[in-house]
Image 1 (cartoon, rainbow, N blue to C red):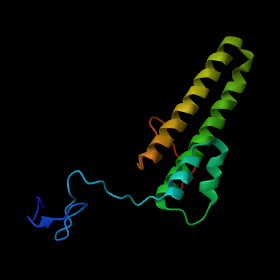
Image 2 (cartoon, rainbow, N blue to C red; image 1 turned 45 degrees about the horizontal axis):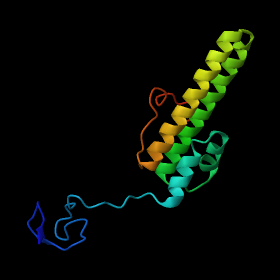
Image 3 (cartoon, rainbow, N blue to C red; image 1 turned 180 degrees about the vertical axis):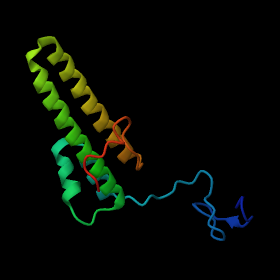
Length: 136
């Protein structure tokens, strides 16, 4: 039989928290407040122009809204980067290098954002997370 580490009350098998004091049971998985729809909308936020879908849909959770704003900011930064690549297109070697770097960076930031959504984490993207071109 297991007992609560905080108050000493007896715990039933399968309890995720103590029924007496609410202390989480070590090793028990806890339910999160994000549902399947939130997960899919959060993933859409990092898929280029599809970031507009969670951004424009009303009554989204705070989790989806924050990821949608990050996705829109990422999209705007990607457009700016690709315009810069276009400006330097007249330099053959520089064009290839910049295109590769911008493409890999876009992919990496989108992947990091999707991983954050999958892990139900509400945190900024590295390096560019502080850049807020679109505010919530």
